Amino acid sequence: MEKKEVIKHSGAIQVSANQISLLQRKIWNVLLANAFDDLLSKDEYSIKIKDLAEILKFDSNDIELVKEAVTKMQKVLVQWNVLEKDDEVWISSHFLGDVKITKKSGIICYSWGKYLREKLYNPTMYAKISLIIQSKFKSKYSLILYELCVDYFIKKQGKGETPWISIEDFKKLMGADDKYYNNFKYLNKKVLKVALNEVNKESDIFIEVAKKTENRKVVALKFYISPNTKTHNLLTRLIKPPKQGELSFKSEEEEKNELYERMIKAFNLSSRQAQEILSTMHDYDEVKEILDMVERKIKRDEIMNIGAYTYKALKDQYQPRKSIIAIEREQEAEARAKEEKRKAKEKEIIDGLIKEYEGYKVKTTKEYVSGLSKEDQEAIRKKFVESLDDFLKSVYKESGLASPMINASYMKFLSTKYLKDEMLDFRSFAQERGYLLEQDKEGWKMVNIKEMLLQK
Image (cartoon, rainbow, N blue to C red; front, side, top):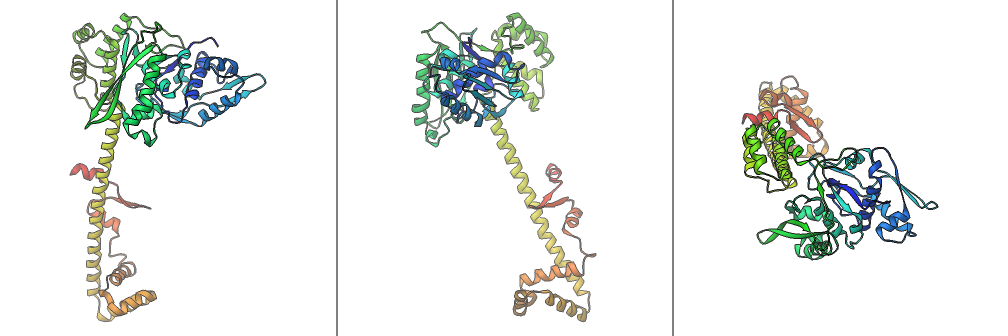
């Protein structure tokens, strides 16, 4: 295998890595580089163990080490695209598919699922990860941070920066989910500093970190990336997707024309406004990111005047201060709050109906009994007492109908035995008052609760 780097999808870089070791991540990168050209044309790929060992700098005779690593990767479910840099898809998948190792020939055969192969082969955003540099890292945190920052390094600017990453998302990316790391002091010492020091010492990029604090607590991190002066081998972050595995950039003029057409046709900007933006904002990546942000808001029906909003966003170079994950979490929390409010209102209505229905049953039964002769009343009461078990009979002898328990039983007895035609059941009672109910194993539910809430 002659490849010195792997073309790695941004989503595959931003994975929840709590169960993935340094060796497993290195092996996965090598397997992807080896299979890349054949991802769409083949279902299975192979590599010699000695080639894998040479790249990773370990003993080629240690097949058990490789078997252990790939077996663990097959069992690991990873969350793909944690920071949602790629808006297209969020994936939860197994890190590796089927694997076969033939000791005699010294060959590893392996696979990935069809959908995953397609995403890996034609990524919308990806980074070139140096297989030579990854072999130098001793900590898995270093390789993860290195891949993340390479993904945000922009060659034509000679620099890059990540978005603000919440501490929770950073821990998820780093695979530092242990409760021990809930204290930032330990996360900083054992994870962040270790990764920063090794990346800055061993790789071709230099990383600086900024910390956002709230109430004296670190809540988010941002990484600034620049070329490492110790090396001239600069890495790239490519924005446009390659076609059929061909890695090529569009010219600046082509990018400019595409953005111009997009602003006019999709975002309702005038020709003058589009030309003004492109003449003042020379970072077309930034223009694209802002348009992507506006597009997400459009899809959520958050914008009334698309043209005016887009123009202002571009002029102000507006970027959301919160990560997409943070925004979606807020939306989920808001949705949960609405649902809880709906359930509380539904419960309040149903409880009120039940109380009202009990009053209706009492009134109806009393009216029915009062209209009977004393002989008929006594006959009914005698039949009621006969229907009681020994315990309730003893309660009846002691308290009669004054007992709430006996009175409730008496009302039920009357309604089921004598008032079937005269008394409404609970569903019909509620419907007469404008409430449509249905019952499942959890109890009564309102069918028209949304309509009721809209009316209020």
